[in-house]
Image (cartoon, rainbow, N blue to C red; front, side):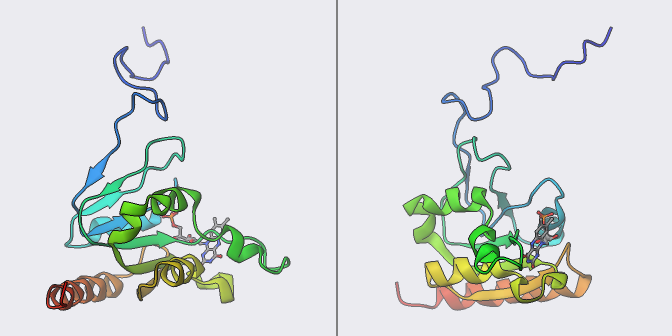
Length: 169
Ligand SMILES: Cc1cc2nc3c(=O)[nH]c(=O)nc-3n(C[C@H](O)[C@H](O)[C@H](O)COP(=O)(O)O)c2cc1C
């Protein structure tokens, strides 16, 4: 008979507990996607390997192992309150990831996902992270992106990493 309980075994750590190991990635693209998963679906369509920032803030954040481009959606506040959109725009899971100095030292560029219905705050989170970390915004796209967006980002990332590898250390 089904008991209706999660398939966690007695040895699995509880998410967010001290026993949960910190995930690491050597992917050149790191992304956050919320439960709606649009940004994740875009990342899956790219040629590059991608590491995911955990959905739950309580879980240990991802640890980057090499220079990476960050792909993130914007979750703005209300346009009616000045400053509110900017205040909430960067998902808290991404803030936790970037609060790690090692992760912050390895960011090289940002790609923004958003929705043009949000007007001036379209992809605002990408602009905020780029300004804070002093790296460029490489591309912006809506929702899960079009096939043209996928092609442009594939091409752009290849060029970007070639250029980066030619920079003096
Ligand atoms: C509550 C809410 C607020 C949002 N605010 C913005 C915004 O300020 N600017 C923007 O470009 N997109 C905004 N979006 C759109 C999301 O960034 C967009 O749907 C994105 O594809 C979501 O990615 P995800 O499914 O990977 O989380 C918002 C969406 C929601 C649900």
